[in-house]
Amino acid sequence: MFQIFNNVPPSTGLGMKAAGTLALMGCLIAAVEPKLYTRCKLAKIFSRAGLDNYRGFSLGNWICMAYYESHYNTTAQTDLEDGSTDYGIFQINSYTWCRHAKLQEKNHCHVACSALITDDLTDAIICAKKIVKETDGMNYW
Ligand SMILES: *[C@@H]1O[C@H](CO)[C@@H](O)[C@H](O)[C@H]1NC(C)=O
Image (tube, rainbow, N blue to C red; front, side):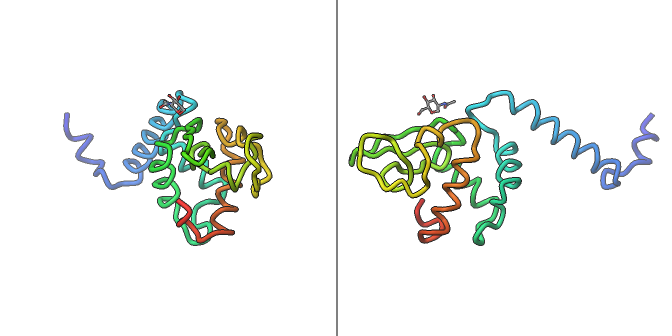
């Protein structure tokens, strides 16, 4: 009975393939909650958007920063004492980077703050790239 398993050591290509498929299935199952991205799903999105090694910051740096800032919550919103608000998965601040009507803003990302709290992370990623490029890297966060 155990003969079959003994013939297939865990380190073979077959074993690796099975592990990969399982990991992918894990991603699919975990991705049902839209507002709260899983680490796995985020890694895919970030990677496709070219964040991996963007300006020398690894995918891990970006994932870690997003977790620290919002716990991967795309709709996270934090009102600060100075009257500005931090928006979205990267908690991008309205005073300098986006437009939200109330204050006189700089809006360097040329984007409505509301676009930074949607499940589509495109605008948030474009803005985060701009911040990293135009400020002191990830020190902004
Ligand atoms: C995400 O953040 C929003 C706004 O801060 C909050 O209302 C919501 O409960 C959070 N979602 C989760 C799943 O934590």
